[in-house]
Amino acid sequence: MREAMFIKKNVDKWNEYQHSETTNPDETAERFITLVDDLSYSKTFYPQSKVTRWINAIAASIYLSIYKNKKEKYNRFFIFWRFELPLLFKKYHRILLFTFLVFLLFVAIAVFGSMYEPGFIRGILGDGYVNMTEENIKNGDPFGVYKSDNPFAMFIQIGLNNIFVAFMMAIGGILCGVGTLMSMWQNGLMLGCFQYMFFSKGLGIESVMVIWVHGTLEILSLVIASTAGFVIANSILFPGTFKRLISFKHGVKDALKIMIVLVPIFIIAAFFESYVTHLMSNTYDKNSNIGLPVWASGIILFLSLSFIVWYFVILPIRLHKKGYQIISGNFSKKPPTLNA
Image (cartoon, rainbow, N blue to C red):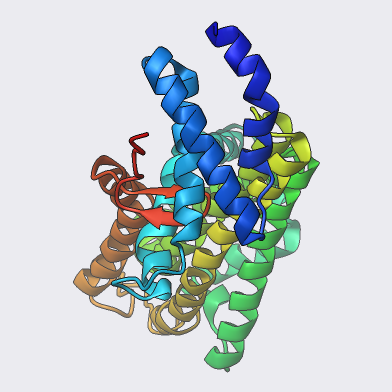
């Protein structure tokens, strides 16, 4: 039989097996046996064909689904955080890079706009906020906005607000990414204008050492939340071999997994802002004393940035190179190659 005829005869069946899961054990066994037979035929007559690799992948996913309840060496919680989430990020590294570059572009636009248009900052941040900040700088209290009589209430409010904003950025992907892009535009402009205010007043280094103690985790997490939004948009616009609805469901599921890891990061960032940044702003003086040893602030900044880069970039690449993969939601060191 010619390969084209072989594919035409069985392609509907393979698509059904790949995209429509079954909970019936007997049907699962029947599918597996059928695929092994097809794989045996394909390996015999078309050993180098892509269809052979496709059939093997479908059979491997069913194989893993049969054994997914097998006792594992590590508990499920550990595997989810140590392997599944990083491998998921590896899948979307290009989207992550795209999101990061677009966000930097928006920040750069805000910086250049602030440099060449005096009213640009007020148009973005509002007269009230700019007037308050300029008054604080004039009084030698540039970071007074972070002062609060109740750090715990500040911690709760900031944490919930950041998580809400992040989820809205992710949900914006449902609008084919337009909602996510608009949120990035707004937050990028605000960040660029906010940071430029301090650099233009000669407080750039102090602002980095104070604000970015919490801002490193907070801002980068918002970028990752935007990535989740674009994951949803990508699943709608580019479904690939899947039906659009199925692709959308996969995209939403992956985006939710990405958001899960951001929740504890936002909580840590809120803690830094309400306690550490709060302490630094309360003890800041005109002699450039930021209220915390420079080395301590530097360590927090370094560890925050290192964690984000390691967990979302380096670890996924290392796991991928070692052969770790997720097939049909199941973790495996090396997906089995079935010898029919």
